[in-house]
Length: 252
Image (cartoon, rainbow, N blue to C red; front, side):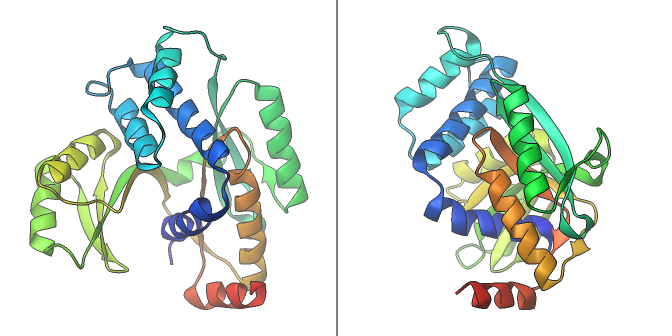
């Protein structure tokens, strides 16, 4: 199973179950603030902001919180100075890792990431050592049991999608980052319910992990993902269903 697919499943299962609501809202607020700063406060003309707002709404964030985050980004109200930083790292088995953060204190964020990596069998890489292995893509998931494949393909093409794949009883609609919002809009206008949607980083190649390496990698991922400043973690690995079942049985 590919790295992106596995990471998405882990995040869906663990994120809603044990990530603190306050930490989740903090990450969403930072994403909205940064998007508004770079592209303005109108979601209709700022695709990145529209995506961030949609994610916040899907997690039941109150509109007052969303509005304040937008105003902080546009400078209408005071707020902490935030900056985006991407760290490149290596994990168990030589896995390449991209760590995207939004922080008000780069020194603190760097120290925390270094500590997690050194404690859990990882290491920080140099600039450019990892990023080239990932491509940005939009991915939208739709329940394959609810909709006809030809219908989904037609709407996806209308919005400018590059591909539609079937995986685990879902249609995975693949888009370029700049076409992501348009494809979502077409699906919404045609009353198509989306299971999930995000602009993410997909590895060009993946590294298969043994059960021990996989277990270490999952622990490293979880520790990085729960850091307050971390927005996204991407990694180029592959874990088979057999290995995942073994890890789950041992954990249970």
